[in-house]
Length: 339
Ligand SMILES: *Cc1c(COP(=O)(O)O)cnc(C)c1O
Image 1 (cartoon, rainbow, N blue to C red):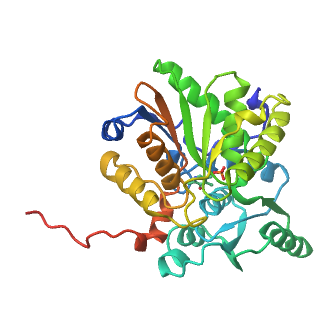
Image 2: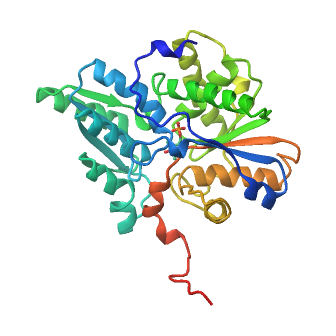
Image 3: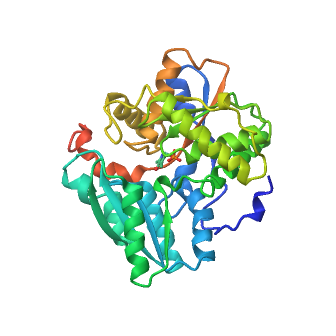
């Protein structure tokens, strides 16, 4: 695979920790649960977009871009991490945000990721839900070009064959860490959205013949659509790393049972998963992605899909900044007094 031949900005805090979740494993009384801490990748707190942006932003630099464009939902973690990279590189950033959820609270509209986008110096433009955001971004890029700028556009979630290289690398990193502690991984589980994470992981895990199965918990699309989308990007990524055809359609498995009402709308299972991880492990999940991914893992343990004697790895993709856009969804006591 020889990933070292691809240009890369080494801004991430890598390798990320690989840890055992003792309390959650005990509570659920099923498999041993391990966690790969990609919430700790750095760049405006961290998250899975750091690994993708290391490769994408190296391409932006190679093209001498002077402004970086990307798009996402209002509380996009990808947008926040992109503008942090742009800030560090000394280039401008412009973000197109889609009102994909309809949540009107001040927290959702202005706090969390939106606050940090502005803090890092990005300019923002807002679009109604249902907008063709890639087309809108292409039109905006044309306007910047007419003004004499050199824009570099990153697709939503940073999910193309360049961004996915970051997760090919993450798969190699994870298998090495498990090897070092003598752990047999029986399954890897994570939230899947724009597909770059799962596509890259699939190429890495299959490409080294690890035999480790991967399950993506969808946060938006139905199972078959998500699997088709992941497979398409995995195939393009395999071509890119010089292993054409290495990933089979059957290597790509997604579960869309935990989407709930839709993208960006947490349900009871999402909130329960976030609270369990906060209280049992002191780890923050998020209401859009990792909370749904963990809700899926918890339910699949409770229903016996994952069992005692197995070792399951949860790939934590980050997103905790989004919590500050969603505080209304948590029914917490306002204060606690010691007795
Ligand atoms: C973007 C994102 C995901 C989904 O990853 P994809 O590569 O888009 O499928 C998962 N978790 C968090 C926190 C994210 O921001």
